[in-house]
Image (cartoon, rainbow over the protein chains, first blue to last red):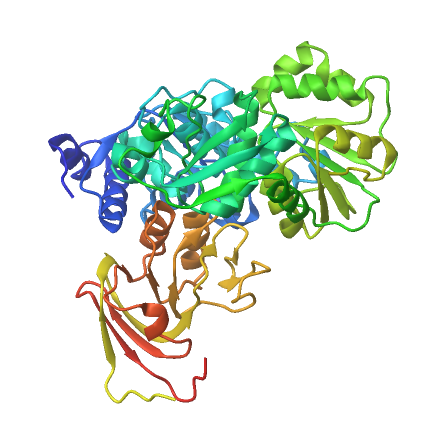
Length: 423
Length: 146
């Protein structure tokens, strides 16, 4: 792999041992990919904190060892300097305020706080969300990024026209300290054109519609780049967030085009560029129904947990939930958790939404989600969610039954204790 | 049933250098890291995976590549720390998840083969890998009937 003089100096120790270890990892990683060179990045979103029992033993030796081993793949514990690139922490395992409700071990809470103090001191912005783009990290068109989190990666590439591959814990650590990432995959213009065609024949309007279309898209194209054409409207941040998270769950979609709505292609021709897609996948009423059925993994209609906020909810979504719960009370056998970034929670508190949701018996959670933390209220057997991604993952992870439906159907189940959602 | 007297030679591209030999564990299905494996014993836990319940610890893992969460590398990284990593990884689909995972698992890894490895290697075959030389040697083992 070709290195610039600056990169060679980093490799040879000019920036200290941690930067040298980071560059060594990037060289090994770039060589494995077959990348020709690295590219500069000033936007890293990764996983740097320690919040799980598996990390405990390493954390006993200090947070520098956690970063060295798990974020740099270094056998030697090196002193960790300030991050060179703008860097944020993605979703974590423990809600810093509602950890007791989660049933988290106080020692794990303390470990997470220690690790956050360590990386915060070194310039990691503790956004603690799967949606950094909702709380101030909005990549500009063409910006080279190094992001983890499949739902964030597809949002960065598809909705914003930023450029990132799906990075991991070690490559984001190395990118944060060097401001470099392999120039491969979605960093190159020629790899961003569409190569699968989806024709949308039924109207796509509501959140439910966008989730189902996303789930269909992932099923059809796997890891390819779909170009969607047809009857779609009401496109906004929240719907593209939901669509992308679903497509990245059922397939491995990391990039897409909806000409007229997403920034990288104004027309279908522009979206395909030099590529051709001979087969057209048609999304019609039958396909929509099939996706809806696929996402149901429950038989028991007696619901005991409503999970909202995957990916983390926006302020408008919290306002809507508060409105639907106004003057009502959850069924005594049902818990309702809504997940939102901590920064948005602060706005929601000030706007009165948190109080209104809690007055009905719900809880507003931040920093984490049940799929990441593997923590649900005790005794949960049947969940309901408005998230295709959560309906895809949580039943398998937590060994529960899962219903998927609209936000309104989920709230209704929360109030009555019974799933009556229908297609 | 075919019995090979001399090992079959397959050539490919080195992803992570090193040599290893062992029994093959072959699947045509991609593997998830987070939510797909138990990093403490190296077993596949994804319910609908054809290898569910089987461990890749010490095996030559032959598979298309990685799928799922960006936690892929971190989970395979933990299999190395826990001593239950595969002995080598032979895969056909290059992605960032796969490349980074192979690098931090630090086992000999190869891709871009001159044979269809899913036709040429069966679970239970004895496989020796010299990644730097870009060579794999496959010896068919006994009564493999797959």
